[in-house]
Length: 419
Image 1 (cartoon, rainbow, N blue to C red):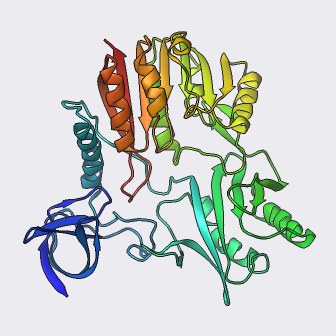
Image 2 (cartoon, rainbow, N blue to C red; image 1 turned 90 degrees about the vertical axis):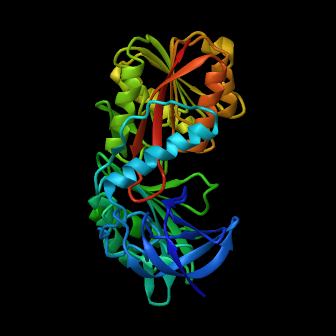
Image 3 (tube, helix red, strand yellow; image 1 turned 45 degrees about the vertical axis):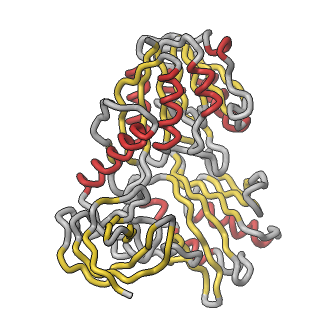
């Protein structure tokens, strides 16, 4: 069955949204103003998913995608939208989520967008089939793997590994199996973590070690499942990143901001907001992307639940003789309490997508003058910001940072002041 629709706006997931006869339609790869003919696919969440059959009249924000794989590869969903429109749409997402949480009249800055080819951390899917190994990303709304040829989003050094990995993996992976390859750009070459259900024998280990040398990797590690601790198979050079000119070791598969440009934008925002603070705590500190820039002008206490990350952060701080202390602590189950927080005159927190509900409730009761909230989820960001405002903080500027090109995701940072 086909219907003719006019797209009204882009929804939260990045699909175009149209209304007709009291029904809502979600149409992937459409833009506002598109007049199109679409076929019904399925019912979803009180609406109907439809696929474009024909664009009768294109909307004004439609452009030619930059990648020949767009629409087939599931890695991107917004390449058909003009960049300025996408930046404004992501900015509006933050406004809408804050509004739903009861926060109005907010100063939202213009979106900072990372450049093409800047994604320095990516997870490839490797699928072993009869004719070899396919490496890429899942097809849209599918568990099948799309074998990529090029990608305008990821760093060129990571893209250059795809072809050699196709040659390496066929004898290493079981037939009809799937592996995940986390690839990260470091100062000393790419760092790879392979997750695959396979016991490593001597021959496999030798092949991985040789691959590390020939491809000039910093390190390669392996684990059989995501729950296991990775085993380093070969390390040619230290897998390090520079954080404010300080070399910091990365544990295999550890979190890192998606792009250097995005990391810099968030760090600059936090440093500007906390410039007058002299004793700062950095919660959910990760590898220290905010800790080290802040330590230029203040004492910083970094807190994170991952002991290996904290050990690496502290070792780097000690070598650089920086005023940084660290603490391994699960902030979801054991947040810093109000009396602990009151020892600081500045705070920054950057939790995972679930947000920091318990920690925000404690911060809201503290007397810390300035708080910087950073998040990759506008829904939990709005919830946590509202908690702080209910506790007496006023919301200042909010900065959108787009590190996730051509996807619906957006990162944001906000400064809050104690009234």
